[in-house]
Structures are given as structure tokens and as C-alpha cells.
Image (cartoon, rainbow, N blue to C red; front, side):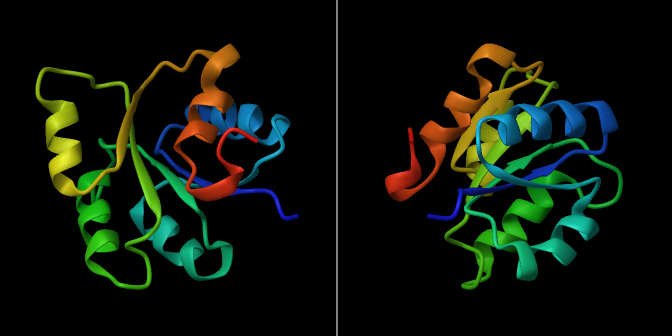
Length: 128
């Protein structure tokens, strides 16, 4: 069985490295993108089941990309998780209103992070 695929979209290299390391160590297939354009370019070939989407990015922000992906029949089924350090009052509501399926705040808890992401995966690989 193929491992679940997770795309991490974040403009901070340390966040990308840490999240991808923890998830890969837990057996997930992980790709990374530093911005919305890289994420869009990866989607057709990588086909993630879940995207960890940073909200604050230069160019198109994570909520803008989420709206585009949820409006497209080819990508609307991907679970998108808002993944942000800018956790201010109302941010979770804005993320959910933009189409995010869930919300995880940074910094991550390394000991729990992979389990949190697995719990958000669609279908039988959740919690595997």
C-alpha cells in the first residue's frame, strides 16, 4: 500500500524542513513548496491527500490558494489544513470560511504532529 501523500506549503525553509522530516519519519510521503505557485506546479504529479497550508506567504497567500483549489473539481477533495503561526482571534474562522478543512497552529509539537496530521487524512490511512 502506498503511503499517504502530504504537501507542505510554507515560505519559511525551517518550517518546511521540520514538518517534512517529522512526517516522513512517520512513513508519510511528503513534498514541499515554498509558495502558492510551486504548490500549484506540484499538484498534478504529486496528488496529495492533504495539504498543510501556511496562510501568510508572499504573492498569493494560503487562503487565496485554498479558495482556488476548493473551486476546482479536480482538487476540491484534497483536505486542506491551515497551518500558521499567526494564530490571532478570528484566524481559524477565516481559514474555515476560505475552505480549509481544519486548522493547526505553529509551532508544532514534534511528539504529536504526525498523529495530528494522520488524524486529518481522509479514508483508511487516517490513524494508520
